Image (cartoon, rainbow over all chains, first blue to last red; front, side, top):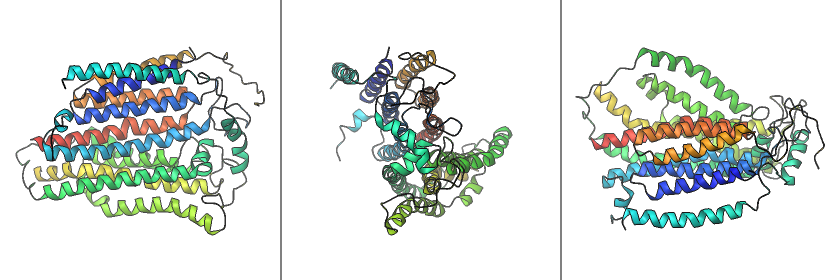
Length: 114
Length: 253
Length: 94
C-alpha cells in the first residue's frame, strides 16, 4: 500500500503514451502529451509527502510543525504554468501544418515529403 | 506499418518500460516516509531568514530564484513563438477574408452570459492582483495571479464586447507589458550584483512582522513582475488565437 | 531531527487516507478516459474535468499552491487555448 501512488504514476504514463502512439489527430496527440506530463506532477508530489504533516505555510501554525517538502511543490508549480504556454506553441504548429498540408493525421503527415 | 502491428509493438515496449519504471520506483522510501534533510532544513529556517511565511514562494523567488528566471524565459519564448507563427498566418489570410461568412448567421450573445461575464470581470481582476502581490504570506504567487488576470480578458470576450476588446488590448501594449515583466525580474537580480551581492540576493529591507505585505524584501517585488509577465504572455497567446475569429465575426455582422 | 509537536489530529504512520486512495483511483480512471475519447470537443471537456480531479489530488497531498496553479491552468486556460485552436482549424476547413 505504500507504493500505490507510484503505480498510478506508471499507469498514467503508459496510458498517455498509448494515446500518443495510436493517435489519428494532431490535437488528440497534444492532449495525450498533457496527460503524460501530468504524471510527473503526481510523482513529484508523491515523493515529498510526509504522513501526518501540514502544508508548508506557517502563517497560523507554529514554525516547528512538521510540514511536507516545499521544494518539490515549487518545482511542480512553475511546471504547470509553463506547460500551458508550450502547449499553445505546439498548437500553433499544428494549425500551420493544417494550413500547409490540409490534413491533421500524424500517420499521413509522416509520409509527406517537402 | 499497419496500425494493429504498431499497437502490439507498443504494448510489448510499454510492458518493459512499466516493469523497469516500477522497479526503479520501488527503491524509493515509500509514500509518506520522506527522509531527506533539505525539506526539513528549509522549513525550519525560511521564516527566520526571509520573514516570509509562505515557504514555497521563498524557494521560488529567493532560494532557487535562478531556476524561476529560466522558467519565465521559457514562457516568454513560447509566447513569442506563438506570435511569430500565427501572425504570418493572419497576414496571408487577411487579404482573402472579405466576406466569407456573410451568409452565416452570427448568434447574438444571450443576456445571461453577458451579465454574468461583465459582473465577474472586476472581482476576477482584483483577485488576480491580490494573488500576484501576496506571494510571501498565502498560497499564492505571480504565476497563479497572472493566469487569473488573463482569464479576466477572456471573460470580456465572452460577454460579447468584441470591439471594446480590440481597442482595449492593442498588441503593442501587451508586448511592452510582457517585456517589462521579464526584464524587471532580471533587472532586480542584476541590481543586486551592482551592489556587490550575489545575483538575485535579497537586498531590500526585510520588514519586522513575518508575513506582512511589505515584508520579505525582493520576494514580493519579483512576484509582482512575474504576475505581469505571465498575464501578458497568456493574453498574447489567447489574443493571437482569437484574432481570426474576431475578424470573421466582424465581417458577418 | 524533527522536534516532536503534538498536533490535534494524528494519523497512524504508514497508512494513507481513504480520500487519497479514492482520488488516486479517480485520477487514473480520468487519464484513461481522456485518452480513449476520440471526438475533439468532448476530449477537451474531459481534460477540463481531469484538471479538477488533479487539483483535488494535489490538495489531498497538502500542496495548496500547486492546486491553485492546476485549477487555473488545467481547467480554464488550457481548454480555452485548445478550443480556440480547434475553432480556427474548423473554420479553415469550410
